[in-house]
Length: 360
Image 1: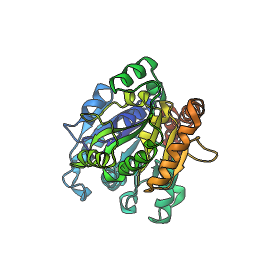
Image 2 (image 1 turned 180 degrees about the vertical axis):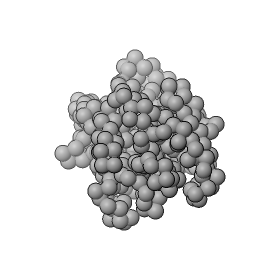
Image 3 (image 1 turned 120 degrees about the vertical axis):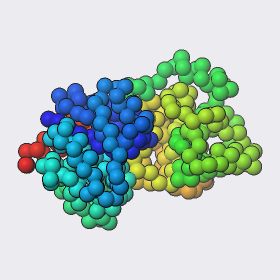
Image 4 (image 1 turned 90 degrees about the horizontal axis):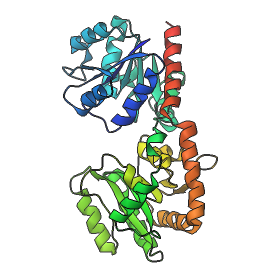
């Protein structure tokens, strides 16, 4: 089986887990290539990981009939299946699928218009809530969508206690401090302003509570806004000097992961925190409650955009004590290992490919 993975971009925020997913499929004996725009991190990172890479820049992404160059490059690789990520790639590949005689599988990671997926043989949704949206709002046939969650390589995030100790020391933390960490780029939808306000409430009673915002500037001036908010509330927030590309040291130094987002597609950052063995507090949005909640991974859920609700959850996590938090952390790691590994995602994806080819 030959598969051409197509992303109409130079880079994506979830590049590393995406490449790990492609590498996991390679173990199954699939011959693969990645098509992307030239000159970006995606091209170099894929090639550094031994993935055959083809570059292509669409003439106009919204006018797929102009992309004869795409058709030529597909014919040169001669795939059995084209697997797209991002809606523009789905539109282009879908338009050419019939004339090329190659079925298209399209993964969506966030809500999108159904028009991009009209010619896809099958769709993969990164989350159950997103599948439900695409069925109920965009009216895509539910039989045409399979849920395959984005994976994370849990082994890469196994906590290194020596690194934890030294990195905590570099942050000025004592052994008794409990570090709450929010992880993500600094943009409004991540809800870090809510987290700062909640932290200011619990800090009045819990002097050993500390807060870090791990990520980097997403919207201009947002880091300064967070600093100003913290200063106005009389609390200290630890923030890295530059964008954090590898969050593992920060996760290992942390005691609790807090995800206060107002909206998400499906959070790789949450999975990485769980894989690092952290108990989690999350807002009550569907991408999070699909993972954290009753009969799922143990953790605490609070009302979105409500600092008082989040402060109560943070207080409850502090009251659990070290042993109670460790029980939640153990469940976090087990959840990832049993449900969200690249191997699991690869097996499910291979099943989709096999089914499509059997129906030709």
